[in-house]
Length: 313
Image 1 (spheres, one colour):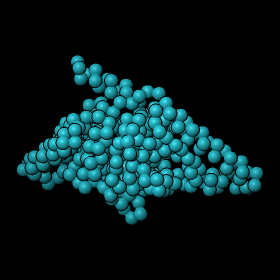
Image 2 (cartoon, rainbow, N blue to C red; image 1 turned 120 degrees about the vertical axis):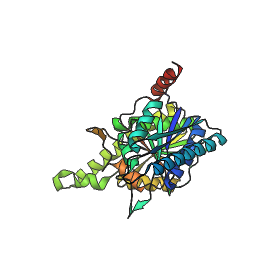
Image 3 (cartoon, rainbow, N blue to C red; image 1 turned 180 degrees about the horizontal axis):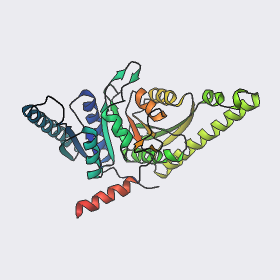
Image 4 (cartoon, rainbow, N blue to C red; image 1 turned 135 degrees about the vertical axis):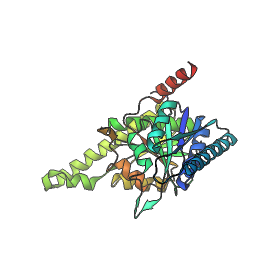
């Protein structure tokens, strides 16, 4: 197992309440991992009706905002860097993440729309869809997170190859923080039985489907626990029942987990498949931070080493 080094964390801020919650989480996470925190805000110079005086004022406010975050981080013993960029927010944020070789992005999202959290159409959605590094999504009304030896991380896995990076990074993050890791895999019997047997279900078919689902979920949890053991993490696991996103969010709530770790599957075109997936539904419904790990995430240890080498040139 590759050891993941969390050396650089980028937090996006626009001065909103959700961004403030993201900053709080990012400072705590950087303190717990020993990473350098990059406070990044993007000034969009393109909105119509914006005068030069307005743009100048927004730039000044942006400078003050990131400098204030740096001061807070340094008070918490965290090395921090302030950065203000201009352009389209998501594009500039992702470009900065690549430039500094960041291991993680932390970003906030706004409230709820009806019974579902508003993620669609936001900068957060674009970042989650397209980033090649894990993205920690923090809701403005999320529960307060504890980062450290008292933390509990909940890893959701289905045992697929696409989720393997989430298992690795979840275990490594737990090891770095000294946190406990719980791996869960959901068995959605109702959905599976609806699609089984061509609509004709015998008792034998029902039992066969249940055994197959339980075996697959158990194997998924066991694989995640093996990764945790390799990382020296205190871990446990459980097979849970129900629609995966609801089951995972309910378990996280009942267990008072500080963080939910999920993986995403593949890409479509140049955009990652998140919409309609279990990961996206968890993002909408969770009442605590969610770390989304892309299937394409490479070794963060390798990325960190590359960034270190480039900084020394």
